[in-house]
Length: 273
Image (cartoon, rainbow, N blue to C red; front, side, top):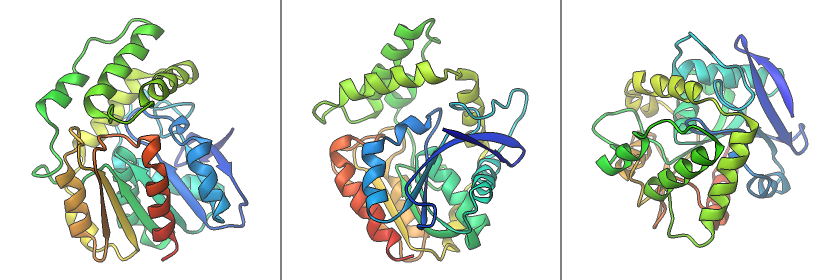
């Protein structure tokens, strides 16, 4: 792993592939770490001829913890720009999930000259009328803070059972292992809360999205209770020419069984830029 000075902070990142190839930058969601972007997901992108960058957002993983500082999703997008600068990446294909897609949207809106294509997954526009969470999904997150590793893992698994895709075979063991590995690498609930504040402070991006002129793919689970599919549909409707890809039975996660379809969609979209 490596660390880059970006936008006045340190961003932890990993790269796969040849840096001379076009870059795909993977941006993860709330409280998540680059571990979410597993080698199994990344290798097909590398084999297709792309230089893949996965990284920890500020306040997550091994990147800078911004104690006492408030920031915005645009600040987080500027972190990505700083990482691109550090890696000598002029333009990149952006792939983001959930909050990571919001960050990617901000980057595309404000720095269009740095973006080849955009893939926005399980996310929304910031319009409060779309992408609303169900009451059950919100309740899943309103639990007492766990006291130890075992409780963190169990709580993470219970949240996933509510907002994720438990109907996909074999995912529970995968999620349990991912939560455990994430805890062992870095556990910072305060950082997650600061990221959540940045999301809560975000304004509606619809008008900015209407000005996006790069090839765009919008992917969303039809069974997502945390960000209703209306958020994805609104994103696709706002961006001229965007392709809308609804995923049956998928919740607010990216089950491994869906990866072949998602990877194919990312590559089809990237080929346009």
